[in-house]
Length: 214
Length: 214
DNA sequence: ATTAATATGGGGAAAAACACCCTTTTTGGG
DNA sequence: CCCAAAAAGGGTGTTTTTCCCCATATTAAT
Image 1 (cartoon, each protein chain N blue to C red):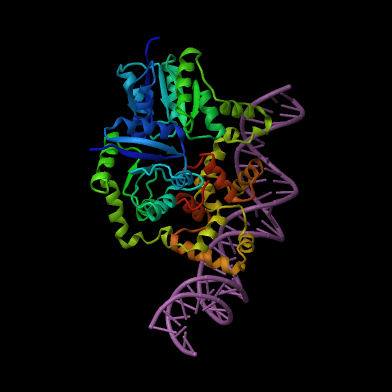
Image 2: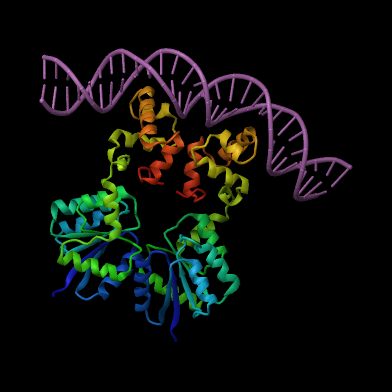
């Protein structure tokens, strides 16, 4: 079995070096280079850097995040297999990542043996998914799942971002060029959809679901 | 030069294994064991596990966080030197950690060479601080720094946590066994201290400063 | 073409939040 | 014990939020 090349895309340098050291300790796997964000990886690939067999990709990164980057790879370098490596456990993030084409999704608290297994499986079977991720996927199939920001409209997302600021609704209405009464409607409908009782509930929801980033 | 023992306290297993692999690759350093939170470390020490020379300590952990754990070590095992290893950059967290007795504070995006240097320096000189942390410390000396949660009273902290829920102020008053009018006072005083205009501002502040955890 | 859904806007009222100025009670030194 | 400061509680407003009801215009679908 030949040696497979791996690239690590992760913004915390020490972590990427540490993971790199780990991957290099596995047989048949070798880290080619590190990138600190998605843009850097894409630039390197465009500049004819070596195309790795596998990319270990963090999700929360500055400049270009893991989801966008994975999508780009799927469309432009379909032979590169992406394994997501994240602390992120929220359903919609995981689903977005898998939709974008990730072949595996590992939480950062897995054992190193699992990482090795995942690398092998992705090479040999084309994918690797833990029971954890499978559960989340199955969960997402049931209809009650249908109140995540997936079906929040663009304007609602925009509104909910303003909700997380110190603006009053009247001021939000001005910013969005809408009547305060329309804003009333947005609010009430979101209260119902998200099952919250007041503006604080919206704020907490928005932050939990990364609609508004602290 | 003999070999120095290191323990890693970090809740994400893969990361602690990766960092472990990195530390073991350095000369003169050897990882004794891993712990996934502070409580686990303390239990092991009490059960006469080997006392390491250095603990690499994450800050955000379940059960017992890095600050509490470091404080405990300072009081009970003063010979164990703690190096904080965190993504956390907020001033007050760093200061709390240093007050608790950490001999070094590394952000997780340092180079591995810096980690090695830090380990050496902490053994030989007793401490290691990057320019980054030094800057933050100096910054904290200037008086305008005086509006962090350092000078928030216990009851205010308790109040601000309730503020981040969907409770009304009246309900918060009941939970805290205070008159709604007293709650009014807490709120007004926090608005002034933290320079925010309304409850949303408090929520955002609380989350930014880890008073309320999502 | 008709229907249904969606986005938009409105009136009015009750509840909650906010502002400002005040008094009483508790508490911690000296 | 006494004083000063901090904590707790109060009165009285205004503003904002929330919650009902409803109307109209536009768009999508059958």
